[in-house]
Image 1 (tube, rainbow, N blue to C red):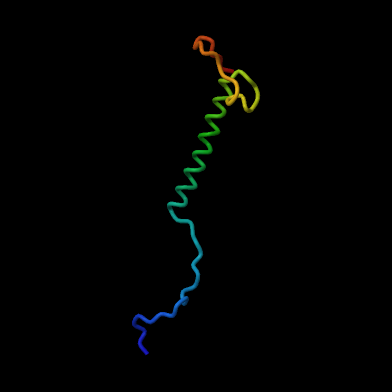
Image 2 (cartoon, rainbow, N blue to C red):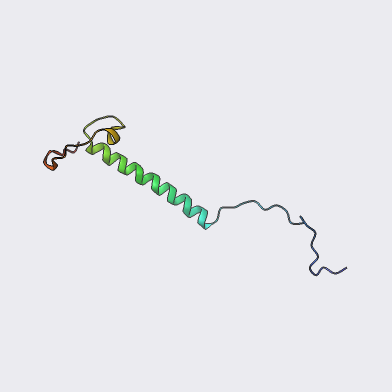
Length: 71
């Protein structure tokens, strides 16, 4: 019996999925985007007049640029 080209179907075991370079880079990008959102939110909290956590979404500064206050 020759072994040239004769393979039984399903003879290879199931391979586990492993993390490759692209998966690691995608995870790093998601972490960086989360940190960037946090930094923007904290700076928005400093510029809004209210003290609540939702102040960057609900309260705005005056339109006059001379009246903008930073906490």
